[in-house]
Structure formats: C-alpha cells, structure tokens
Length: 357
Image (tube, rainbow, N blue to C red; front, side, top):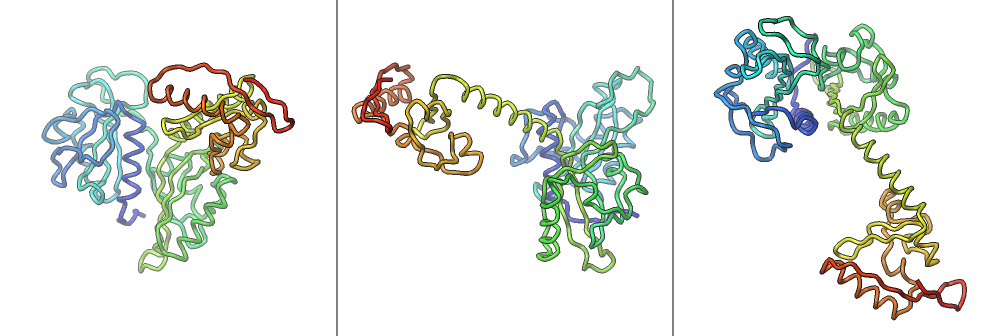
C-alpha cells in the first residue's frame, strides 16, 4: 500500500530546517522543478553549509550512482522527503547520504542536502558494495479513527525498529511516552473537531525500549472518499532535544552553584531590567520581590512565566542615599563599562537599626 500524495510543505520544511541545523558540515543546493541546481532562497535558514556547485546533482556523483539520484528524484515528487547513498566525484571512496526534500510550497524549490554517511571507514577505490542505510529522519503512518495503525512506510520501520506486521492494528498510545499521552489525546480530539492539522512534539518508543523525540503532524482524511484515515507525519528531532536537555542541565547546575555561594548576586541587562538574582541576595537584604512569594529568583520566575522582580523591590531596604549611589554606579557600568565598588547603607525590615554593606 503506498502513501497517498498529500500537502507536505509544513512538515517537510521543518525536516529540512532540522537537518540543516544539525549538520553544518553538509553540502546543500536548491533544485528547480526541471532538476537543475539553483540558488537557495534567502528565507531558507543555513548554518554555514557549503553550496553544491554544478549544473545538476547527477553531475557531481560517480557514474554508477547516478541511477540512484534519478530514482530518488522520481520518489521525492510523491513522497516529499527521500534519502539514499551516493559517492561524489570529489570523494569517490566515501559514501555520502543524499537527501531530497520538497519545499516548493514554502520556497518554490526542492532542497538537496548531502552529508557524510554515519558508517565508519572509507571505501577502497573500486569497492561498490552497498552499505546499510542510515536511519531516516522522516516517516509516515496511517491510522483509523480510533488511533490504530492501518499502514506505515518503510522509513517508519527503520526509524523505530519495528516490522510492519508488529505495528499494524496496534494502538498509537501504546507507543507514546506516558508524560506525552495527554497532549496526544488533546491534539487528536482537536483534529477531529476542527478538521485542522495538529502539530505536537512528543516521545515515541523504539522497539529496543528507548524513546525518540519526534515532531508529529496529524492530517485528517477520515471524511475523504477513498481514504478514511488519519495521516501522521513524523520528523526525528531527538538530536535537537538532546542538545536542549544538556543546556537545561547545565543551567540548572549553574543556578544551584550561584544560589550556594555566600555573596548576593544581581544581574541587569543594558536597559536595567533584572535578568537574575540569587536567593542569597534576598537573605542579605531581607527583601521580598514584588513578583510574589513563589518567585524566589528571576530565573525561577522566568521558568514559570511569572513577572520578573524589579530592581526597586529587590533593593527596597537600601536607604534613599544608598539607592542614589547605586543608581549612579550602575549607570557608569552600563554606559562606560567601568567597574564600580561602593559601600551602601540599608535598613533591615526586622528592626530600626541600619546595616552597612
């Protein structure tokens, strides 16, 4: 059973962006509808990738692999995103992965992306043995109105490690991470009621028990003659999510370290907006920020979407004279880049006695 032709402009464009973001070492070019290489449109984001130069993509691969390029070109017209293994004339001993992505709806071109194959080792000259394909990043599944699988393409089986027979008739929720199932149900109901495409980022289980982050798009064809299914398009974004999770862990570690030190810290931007303060600052000055009792620091407030505390509330225990000195010193730091050291007086709310800091 083949996947019916559908409008893939949004999901294929997302797949192209994800591929380029994660592979700055790739070679890229735009391709017109007649197969000729054209400049990549300006709106297509790039991360330093080099351009593929020449008249057409088959001209830059070795002769035995040109048939592969032609076959991929025919398939991309129907499937929206395809990939295969080729060798370039400039590196005939090394296998590369060639991606064609149809982004004509958004940018009026198809996109060609060529990147080193994940397999280790270089082929010797004259060795044409095919290497096993790397896992694809884009796949489709057809489901019935109850969320049970009617059909999946070969790319889905490769991405998640299942055979087609293992997923046919199975409920989609059985493959979704428990923490993401609520959003999946909400998206499914919204798709049914509004008949509009729904987009969700979630985790799906591989056969080996691990989880893959995917951008998921639901297309409702339940009421169309000859179809009567929901088409689910999946884009692998696990590499992107791994980077985000690593950054979040480092930010949390830095936050714990800043809260643990004995000095109070207050961080401003160039407009004197508070970006961060640690809990020790509040303990020293004995102030309560105006963002509310749950916002122990500006970083936490930003995480939960609460209002960021103002400098006035954080420094409210400073005397008027001290506040004027602080404001002048902060102005020199921000406007002239000059470090400032000063001593100021503040009044503790718990007593009438003043303090010096």
